[in-house]
Length: 75
Image (tube, rainbow, N blue to C red):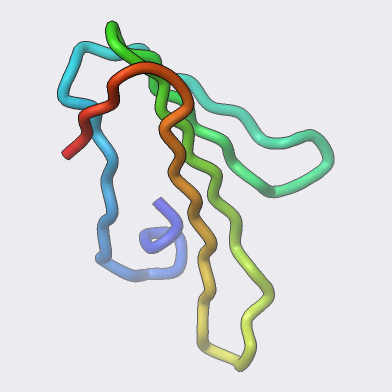
């Protein structure tokens, strides 16, 4: 999503292989986005934020993916 916002065509996708329910929210008073996938066998969470660029024309995106519970299988 962030790449598209700045005119890029990159993609980075996390998709559980089991059936899942997805949800997400912004951390209160921040621009940090949290995604959460609850599957039949586990929970996967991802946090994303845009960092202040070190130089003009450069984007730095921070992403952390964590397996929180149970067995997790993603592709």
